[in-house]
Image (cartoon, rainbow, N blue to C red; front, top):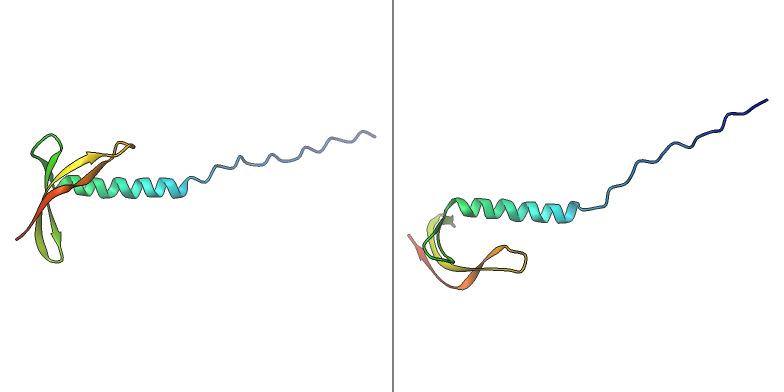
Length: 83
């Protein structure tokens, strides 16, 4: 009698857990894209943004800088006007 070799079923390849980092990146992308909708460039790294804050219109005139990852971050120099 010949027995057939039993082949063990192959296990599916597990993906590395990148959900947390991808979620963080996607949320930052979403916030930056919504922020870009109301941002207008007035200089090399200066922008004016208009948004709603606590029921009032806020106009933010601010310098931005690039972090090491290449993302724009608001700087310390700037003015905020409430209307």
